[in-house]
Length: 165
Image (tube, rainbow, N blue to C red; front, side):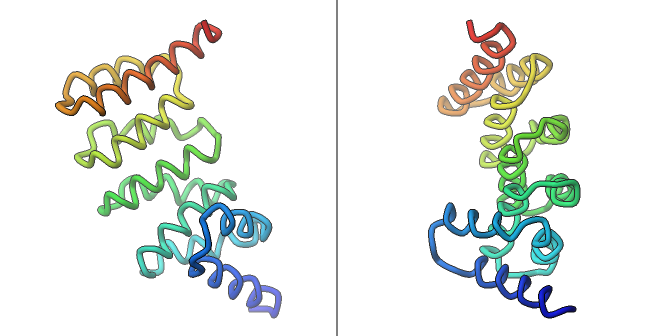
């Protein structure tokens, strides 16, 4: 590894461990640019501390790009529900719609935290094709707050589909 690569890896390591607020850390990671993506991917797959992995996942969402997004999509099938939920959040934050079908594949996830993030993501970026699956999800929900979150997501989709009316 070259000196520059070592310095970049060292800075990424520092930022993932710092206790500063996430927006500050995310901004600094974004300034490091695409060169940080492979380092972050290694952190995600390297069996690091859960907090480091979670921050690395969020950073991949902030940086974006094909390798970052491929890693995030692969995490949608992770056994750890917290990491699945964070991967959905990170994909939502990329602002790209290409992975919505993969996200929608989690509409039957057993984790309420994952479902919460899926519903928010589909509400933010989804089209009308996601309305019926969201209605189906709402019909299976016992908790009022989840039914309300789903209704808000459907409203957001329908509003966008009808020009904000």
